[in-house]
Amino acid sequence: MKTVSVLGATGSVGTSTLDLIEREPERFRVRALTANCDVDRLAAAARRTNAELAVVADAACLPALRDALAGTATRVEGGRDAVIAAAASGADWTMAAIVGCAGLEPVMAAVGQGGTVVLANKEPLVSAGEIVLAAAKAAGATLLPADSEHNAIFQCLAAKDARAVRRIVLTASGGPFREWSREAMAAVTPEQAVAHPNWSMGAKISVDSATMMNKGLELIEAARLFPVDPDCIEIVIHPQSVIHSAVDYIDGSMLAQLGPSDMRVPIAHCLAWPERMATPMEPLDLVKLGRLDFAAPDQDRFPALRLARDVLKAGGARPAILNAVNEVAVAAFLAGQIGFLEIAAIVSDILDRYDPPAPAALDAVLAIDAEARVIAGERCQATPVTRVGA
Ligand code: NAD
Ligand code: MG
Image 1 (cartoon, protein in one colour):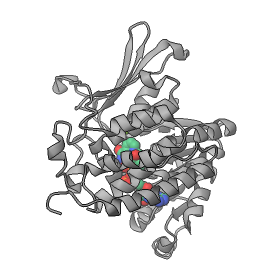
Image 2 (spheres, rainbow, N blue to C red):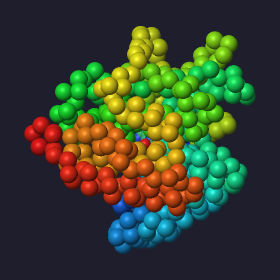
Image 3 (cartoon, protein in one colour):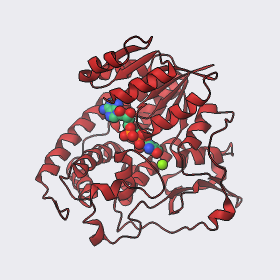
Image 4 (tube, helix red, strand yellow):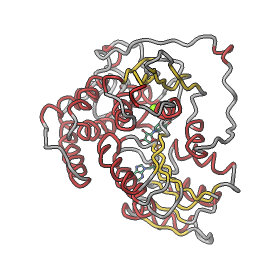
């Protein structure tokens, strides 16, 4: 039996993970489930899975969680430190599915105990990739990518020799505004931005997909996880989201992974790895699909792509700043404070103005993340709302 923990258990990825775990109760035992403050969903999940521990990051939600789990064997805890402790509570397999850099310390705690850590939560890899990877190596932890593109690349990386890889092709749906002009995008509302054509996801990553910052974050994530030169990672628009990414070898073979656009497929790969497990997904019907389309991305309409490639090349503190400012700007956009196009504009502006030295350790990354958030918050306040109808 595998003991499993799910950090961010009430979110989109967390719920998909629990769906798979609950289908095979003889195979998985749940150690810890965490959430920010979703008491009802967290308590329901803890009851269904007989979780040993349930934790809310927001300590103010602890009394409600205690009430909701009264009479069960599940221990309850609250607060950020309790989430970090839960991440290191000895599970064999941990799903990191908190959203944003809030997941960085829990990810560090999880990798620090060895075992298998599955990364859906991409922001820690962007902000502190080298530090997370070094901690995993030191502790002998196994990192598995759950992000569908990176899971696809992982599955296609059959070559033992990194020099045999010519190129990684990172596919992108292009999001809901793939064919929109900049003028049309200026008037986008939060409701339009979170309605992704192919995937059902949390609000933050849905907005990131709409600005294509998600693909920028994933470019950095891919460069951290896979040993290729960043220039050898090519982003290709593929609107159907059937090919989740591909690896091009020097001999001319290209291996791609195909599957339905449902996160349960890559999560199942990570749950059973190195074996396989069944999922309830219908098999892909290629005849019904009929065709697959590809196009080059447009960095002028989606400047987040260029920003991400620039910060990846520059390294140091730049990726952490890009990520922190983006998190603040996305939250401000969702709150109706700034327009859609201002998200990337604010990221670009603050990257021009804030240039601290490269962080050598986790504390320095957290300090840069915190300072960038303050600067970004002030910048969002100062920006006039350009959203039509606001
Ligand atoms: P979500 O918003 O649906 O869920 C986030 C989870 O994190 C919730 O359980 C929430 O309670 C918890 N949380 C939020 N803030 C927290 C905090 N400050 N401290 C502790 N817990 C907190 O998000 P999601 O769509 O499931 O995405 C989670 C992560 O996985 C993101 O990093 C995202 O980029 C990545 N990802 C998601 C998908 C997807 O299909 N949704 C695909 C690939 C990667
Ligand atoms: Mg992805």
